[in-house]
Length: 92
Image (cartoon, rainbow, N blue to C red; front, side, top):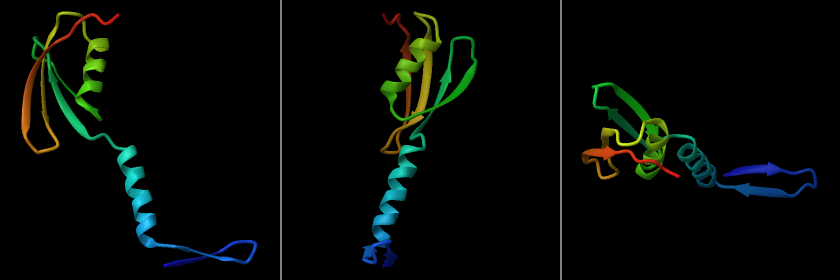
């Protein structure tokens, strides 16, 4: 336990577990969860980091032309390697 003295003179008790939990939440918020390998029809490869597959789809729709077929390869949270083919579309 840590002892923290305030200006009033009271003592606050802060547990080490609480400090570790705050650091863990901060770490999760500031790191990307998945790494996606994107390959287009010409064979150009690109790596994009993101927090979810849904957010990746939004990025790809903005980045590539409509009706482009892309190959997306990533490892999900259950450690299974997935390969998906995506056709981008026009988002209004």
